[in-house]
Length: 297
Image (cartoon, rainbow, N blue to C red; front, top):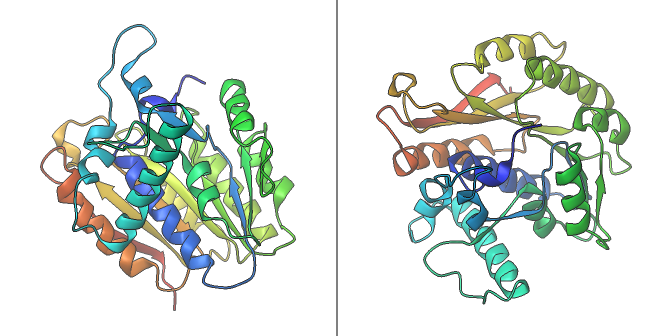
């Protein structure tokens, strides 16, 4: 696997993905019964953003200043984004203190949490998390990061296999995050197959899938495959475009598909995506919002 998320940590795609993740977790936790959080492509727990500028052979332009960096000093954030930025601040303070870098977050973050750390910080006593990662280096870092945690376990395994291995959970409630690197030619087909298997095993489970919007992504074909699943439950997409398709950006946007969403989550997430579009815009044509694929009647 050539993809290394440390180069992209904290970019606009992470902002959308992680803000949506925290909103979904909060929505499911409105009920007292515990949940399983299953992360199929977890990466590592957190990232040192100074490494984002260190490429394999030459320096790189870090992406976080155009993502979480634009939100860092804003006071008028929507509620979902306030929760997200505060979670990033808390992780940054803790990591600075742990590494001897001091607890002052300063003008911007030095450390950024991946989805495993954000989810861990949100777990209640009755919740638990299983974090899966197949890439050896990332899996080793993930295992070290969560060694000794009572409510979080890590597995070095293919994330799609994890859906068959981990579902249905004893809790009978779950949030499954599928966030692959999209390097495989058959990634879309694997996602749809995994969703079909996951829904068969846990029909009421909440499934969230992050996806890119690029010239190669062919997201319309993904929607058609998805809608071909028999008995697909209510689902929507939260999308954020930081520029129009004609702007020449390699990655002009991203989205999160949410199946079996928590009650009344679509409205706030749509408002959040629309608010983010002009703030994180990189070119003309930025927009955001929610689109229902299967309405919740």
